[in-house]
Length: 396
Image 1 (spheres, rainbow, N blue to C red):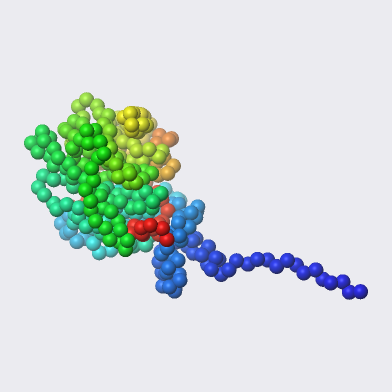
Image 2 (image 1 turned 180 degrees about the vertical axis):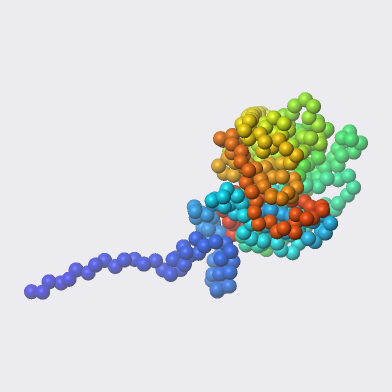
């Protein structure tokens, strides 16, 4: 009697679509943009919010990057934006891509995860360096004499909504009279939208102020600094989902005045909280003060003071002026020189270990160092590449 051979259980092979999708999520964004041309199906998948969300969950993608914006003040059409990647072997950043596109010339104001936010010719813009998508918003208010206009950008991860806030301030008779107003750009389907006037729900606790340039967005709340007079500043917040404005008073030392305060204070996210870094005594004493909002409702701040080790004081005790620009997820801040000097470098300050080191920037085109009048802005993006489209609204 012949015995029947046992059949091995068949292995279940995933469909090609699933395999292809899994492979695509592990490719760099630059390759994905090219692969959109393969077919309508691929283009639809790569452009979808579903795929974008999957793409961002790949754990091995996180790598800090620097984006450097150069603008010739003698030629408004001459500008460049450079992408820089860390070189682990030599502890420096190296220019690895020129991302310059028409109409990009800018001063970088802020970053959202994966996006560079800036204004150019008075228009707020958001640029995705991974996909080369540039979105330009209409101006919120016509320019007027004595009126200061600032734009702030935010994203709410719950509603997946991108928001632009415009804050304007008018100072008359040396702060004796002040007016301010606010507008929010509301995104609609197919990239359409409009500006609407926004007002605080508790106007008695919200004072007219002069907005300062640059802000941060943390957990769906946009923060920026404003001045209520020559000596007092406030932290203004806008909650994206509720649409509510609030403000709390910023601590100050006796003798603090407007010019020095603006120059020496930076607004960052640190440990998931909005934090002010005060570098007034950095050059002379090697000291940084960190003021963190612990409870906005009760106007409670905590203060932490860091003092550089004497052996590292030479890094800041010189004729170079630095400005804090960006933080990493592991507790480091980058200090960027105000001007373009050769060889160009930045300072990396580990706040947890109280350790500072100098990092050279290599690969900047030589002709930029010969410009007579030049603005240089450098923004750290310690986030993964993003495929998100800021014009997506609703779910897909």
